[in-house]
Amino acid sequence: MPDIIELLPDNIANQIAAGEVIQRPASAVKELLENAVDADATHIQLIVADAGKSLVQVIDNGKGMSETDARLSFERHATSKIKNIDDLFHIRTMGFRGEALASIAAVAQVELKTKRGEDKLGVLLHIENSVVTRQEPCAAPDGTNISMKNLFFNVPARRNFLKSNAAEMRHIIEEFIRVAMAFPKIFFSLVQNGQEVFHLDPGSHKQRIIQLLGNHYSSKLVTVKEETDYMNIYGFAGKPDSAKKTRGDQYLFVNNRFIKSPYLNHAVMSAYQDMISKDSFPLYVLYIDLDPSIVDINVHPTKQEIKFEDEKIMYAFVQAAIKHALAQFSISPSLDFSLNADIQQLDAVNKPFNIEKQQQAASSGIYQDFTKKNQAHFIPPDNNLKNWKDFYIPATSPQTPQQILPLQQEGKKILTEIPFIQLHQAYILAVRENGFILVNQQLAHERILYEKFTSFSKEKKAAIQQSLFPQTIHLTPDDALLLETLLPDLQELGYQIEQFGKHAYLIQGTPADIPVNNDKNILEILLDQFKHAQASVELNAREKLIRSLARQHAVKTGDTLTQKEMLVLIQSLFECDTPGFTPSGTPVFLEFRKDYIDKMFEKKS
Image 1 (cartoon, rainbow, N blue to C red):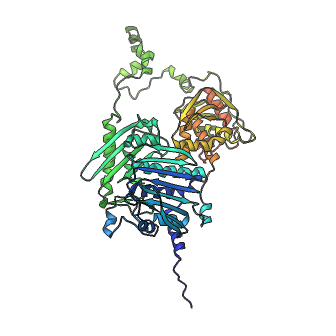
Image 2: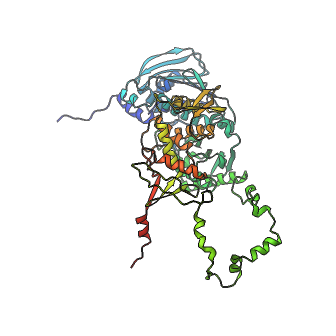
């Protein structure tokens, strides 16, 4: 039998290895930006075309490379960072494995121009499919200019798995932000299809955070700074009122390297306990400096997952630093002994308890019963108790007999002319012929709005209500890019939004017959959810948009509803095609049948 094991050709082996490092254009962006940082550059430009599928180019003013180093840099495991095995445990640079350029050259067409300060001429390299096709001297400024063109041109199957340009561009911006946020003293710029998206001048950490995340955070950050012999932690945490419903704007850096650590994220969240709701997420940008020998960053190809020598100490330090920062800025909860202004307007507070009222109260039966000794077990036969049922009639409902129509899903008959009871400003109790139903008011309204938005299409666009006072919304560059991709669908759903300067938009109109809300806030939350929310199933952009809009426009838990509002809500719910469940499958109402209730109270013989 002939031997069957063969060594793979270098180009095939490189393509397989590249799959671990270069998964999409954003992967190359990360590696090239980090190489520029390691070259001590102070000015770094990122240029992309077609969301990185056609071009990813990074230009820096760093140290540059000699001709020999430039050629060797594209060989696998070629690195200037590692001389012996001990160096792996003292890593302070961003890249060190020597796989990035080799991986890029295996799946793209690469052009490199580089020059050192002491050299008169630089070197030009063209590499395709891991093969150097051109090498010659060239005139070039100090530093490195590297272009990656036609990603996955030689692996069509991999290219077919790339997402839309808008989705791939968001990944690129995400990687760009992570590197730029870690090095605020370096100038960074990002140009997409000839248009400058970011222009970040050197500055402080806070200035860079505001440049990247938006000016609205300038007054919502508290300083975090703790220094110990074991580690230093510094950065910023958001005030509780800036917390969001999605897990965005959370950045953790260890020795200037962005990492993902659910363990340390839990430490931050625990510091906010009782200060924000359980379904909210605070902003934080934290930088941790510690001895590289007590952290292992070589556990994942992307170097975003790391291991600490003592995780419990790290957890305690991070939690304590956040708590201390919030306490220093008087954010921690405190007892408030001041009387609410609404309470001060009540008759019981602002009217004096004069002698006449005191005598009237003292002569009442209730006062007499409660002031006598040993009367806790005794309930006198008071005729006033005969009207006890009146306590269960809502104050806003008319004192008339209830007229109940049977609630049947098939005929979509609903309750009319009946007082509804709102429980805990969250649920609506509606009596029906053979029991009652308990409706979640927010989920019910979500279902109603979802079906209304879904009914709109390119043939049947939503009616637009022109805004009397149009609102202006200022966005970060990445949010502006996302909004641009969503504008066609938003217009079909009833939004009229126009560009109003760079990264600014004017909300000229909103969907008619939809509750009036803070449309600026709704759009900001919508964009945040669209970026960060993880759906359990793969949903297209329009479906995600409709679900998010329905969620934002719906009445919320805590909203007080009138009898008319509850009636309209219940009627509209049972006119829906699928009244029983939200789009994600959560029950909207529970039904309690009389026979079931009777069984609950049956005596056990």
